[in-house]
Amino acid sequence: MTDTHEPQAPDYRIDGFEAATERIEEDFFSVTLADDMLVPLAEHHSDDGRDTYLLFYDQAAIWDVPGTAEYVALHLTRDVEQRTFDFEYERAATVPLAQNWLIRRGCPPEATALSRNHGPRPADALTSRLEDLLRTNPDGRYEVIDHHTDSPGSFDFGTQVRTLVHDSHPDSAHAPYRLFLEETARDFRSYTVREGAFTSAEAADDWAMDRSTPLPLAPAPEATVVHRAQAARTRSPLAGTAGIAVPPVPVATPRPVSPSVPRSHRGAR
Image (cartoon, rainbow, N blue to C red; front, side, top):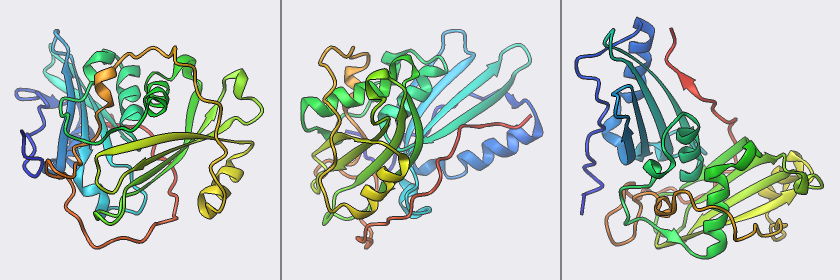
């Protein structure tokens, strides 16, 4: 089993290539400066050598701005004739959102399946179905509005991730703002995902800040959702018995601050 404290080095496959512009080189250096803290979870390299898709767990996110997303998706593109490369990346709050970002940029869905399988597992079928919806995002129905990751880094508390989306599906018109709440158990063996339905983004924010009432659950999705990447359900390398990617730190207070959602970033030309 791979030691998550010493993750495998990212395989960018850019030996013999140069950044297409000086700005791209600077941006790539900035993004990968602390890549020894990135735990590779999935990767795919196209047969023609032009594209590389990478999914990481960022061990350093816990020490970043409160609420920072812990997953990083990276897409490298190469001009094999000119021997140059460009890239874009995205921070994502959850694995399915990171996988969807890669899929939308041409990565085969099955290639986003996680290669590490000792993280927490979905606690029930509903969790798996909701993750499938986020991963496939059928007809582009979900638009991410905001997200917040609360990862205390302590075995006294589990992690919690809130992702607020706008759902354009006609069946959701009465309450189009959906809050996907992911909660990981304290022992990091399992996690649940639940979908709350709200009439406005403000109502969802108010509930998240107050939490005095149960999450107003949306109707459960039908079990006919296509499982395009079933193996991808195993999540981050956090685990109670197999070594953890983020060493516990003495931070146990929930952080209500909700930063704005970072957009996709592309190497400047």
